[in-house]
Amino acid sequence: MHGKVALITGATGHLGSAMAAALAEAGATVIASSRRIDAAKAAADGLPRIGDTKHFGVAIDHTDEKSIRDGFAAALEHAGQIDILVNNGHDAIGVDWTTVTAEQFNRHMVNATGYFLLARHLREHAVARAGGASVIMIGSMYGVVGSYPDAYEGVAVASPVAYHALKGGIVHMTRHLAVYWAKDGVRVNCLSPGPFPHDRIAPEMVRRLKEKSPMKRMGRPEELKGALVYLASDASSYMTGQNMIIDGGWTAW
View (spheres, rainbow, N blue to C red):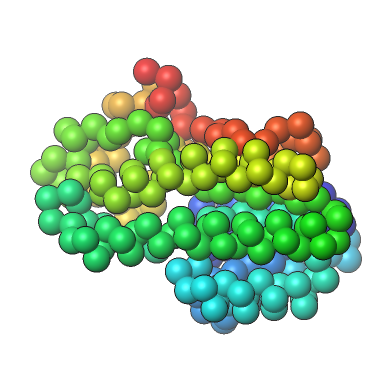
């Protein structure tokens, strides 16, 4: 991927940091974004460099339209072009179906709006430079299947209904944009992780989740690297509108 430039949102997070590293290890110039410019720059500075590759940090709050516009412009100013967008940022609201308010539910949907606006910025840039592009939406296995209530009962709130609605929408938005933008040379695919819990998750819930998985274990962030590089690179040049699920077999039951 030498010579390619990838913008990834949420680059400082649990999965985002591993995905940013994967792009850098494959030789791409990585523009790491976070809500805070200092965190974004620190993430960029910590990425591996292949040859003379440089990485940059920009501030993007993907729930704010002006921040999206300004952050995308800053990324272009740093690198001159953007070939790949990884829509990974996520503004979480951990409220389940029993108590979630209309305001909280609607706020969760703003994540999808941000994904779309960033993707459209990349599409317009790609058309202007006639260079093609790859958009990777980060979905979830919970955009395809429901969760098991007994995995959460007594140890955590139910898997948030707004999260399921959001991720299902992102999976389908992937298909919709892919068919509209194919003629522009812009591919749009979705990468949907399965259970990749942060170490802050309750151990009992992790134990229960393991029992629901054919592999009987949770995913490790580095296990998303190969799939991400495949979708970002020309290795997947004839693939668009697809949802690649990396879930240890969870959705195969």
